[in-house]
Image 1 (spheres, rainbow, N blue to C red):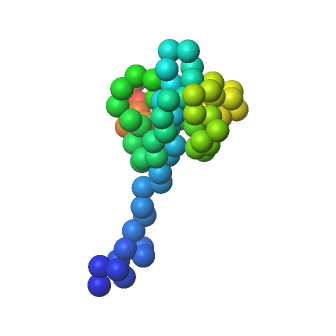
Image 2: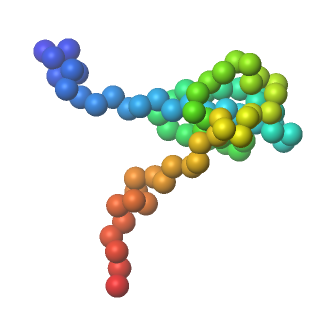
Length: 77
């Protein structure tokens, strides 16, 4: 029965992140549904191993997402 219900449940989408050092070179990748904790993580459109130890191309970075909690705040007068 659990399998049946799992067909209708939405799974969190995995996002791609790259860890950049102080010179802007890629040091690590991570794929997860929430942004990693710590400094230096940026969201990228995909993971390419050829970017390791090299600067990320400008087209690779995604603009930061607005969290859902900020999107649904009530308007105050």
